[in-house]
Length: 147
Ligand SMILES: [Zn+2]
Image 1: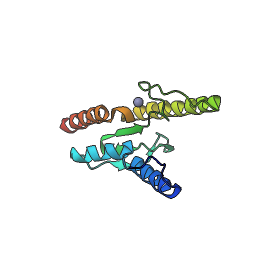
Image 2: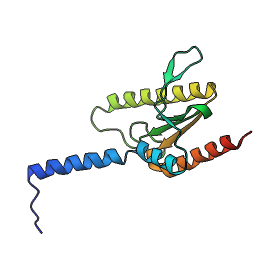
Image 3: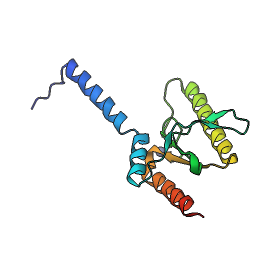
Image 4: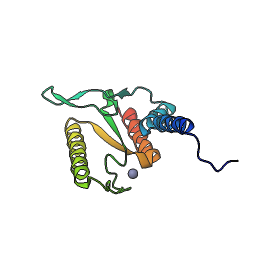
């Protein structure tokens, strides 16, 4: 056992490994795996949805176009999860505040336009993937069982 800090090269390797790990556990990948495990593999990634006039509206993270179900997997920091209520960065706070405001505005505009087009919209938060996916599975089952 050594109390010395690791040499730079091994620190660099360590950082790369950490980065890869966080990429592999990305919330979106987790959600996709849970859907597949539950037997719903017919989703599309970043499927293009147009508005009524045929103009580009958005590309939900995951969607079931036939059933008109759109899923957004939101990172708590970028999309300002109301539950986590993470604090703003301490430097350039105003910049971040207006950036986040624009994110939220865009999120809610996309969501209401999708709903107007007859889509079910689910937002799955990074911090409560289990609950989010459970809700989605309920909707999927419900819509499948309908005549
Ligand atoms: Zn959260």
